[in-house]
Image 1 (tube, rainbow, N blue to C red):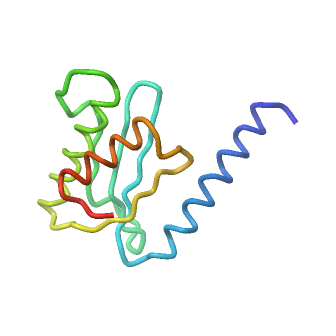
Image 2 (tube, helix red, strand yellow; image 1 turned 90 degrees about the horizontal axis):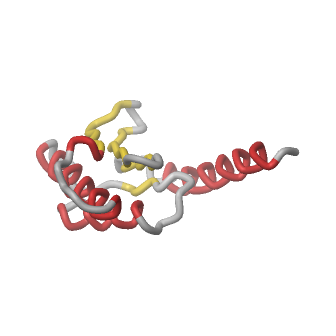
Length: 117
């Protein structure tokens, strides 16, 4: 197989492995994160109803600095939006990304903002 196809298959396996552990806790909404090269996006999803409850992206924040600081600010902003909708507990879905760098900074910002996971 070509290397690009192998990378895609590995990414799907990682995502599925993480998601299966998360979906076992169906009672709580899922905080999912998507990281592109330029921005980071996040949303809180209710899997039982199949609806997005809260969404935020890095373009909405006005924080200057490197990508890690922007991810932290995004976590705080998303937590603020979630608190307005009375969402306090979530399950963190990191997808196929390692809990490192921008993903970790985002999670820490969400915790500082008041979300529990």
